[in-house]
Image (cartoon, rainbow, N blue to C red; front, side, top):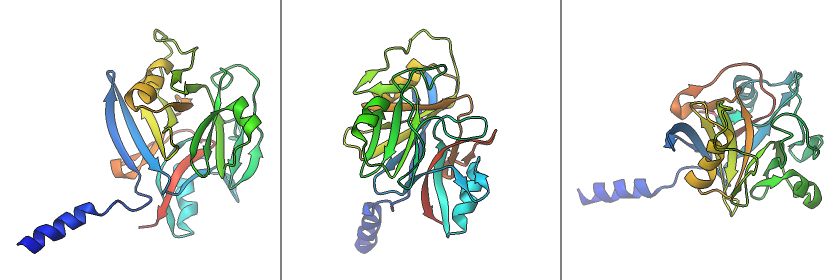
Length: 243
């Protein structure tokens, strides 16, 4: 009997394998969100195009990975895009810059400065765009979007608590040491201020970036979730061995 107990305890002590992204539902300040947390040990990538053009969907990315014996572990849309699905602003894939950074203000959420860049390199970073242009950090993958939600622990100054602009929204926040990236999507319509507070006050993350609203979608097999809709531009997701 003692051997069985010790074996069971040893089983519980075994850590999850790399690639096992944890996704869960949570409530914050009266609203529902789904969170997926990725650590540096996981294979997190950005996806946009294959031989036949822009993937546009989680299903097509997963099919492309299947040809290599791999699969999507989790995924979500990861930045704004033009009508032809090309990225708005900086996009880097496997160290190759495919779209240039944009640092001027402009219309829409992307131009609500400061905006920022999510960088996947030796650690995870969310960096304000003009700072990114100056410092030029080494990113294996990078996507630009906006606005920033949280900047060094402070909310974007133009996000208003009383705003009536309500949408399903998604984005990413990173830990201070860059070892964790938490991807979040709201399950009900929220304003920017409420979404930013989720990252800062609910999750304790000092930097966070908005990806998009209205078209926001999530792929999380462990939650039996595969959101469909119009074709997407950049997609972020983990890669795992095909089961």
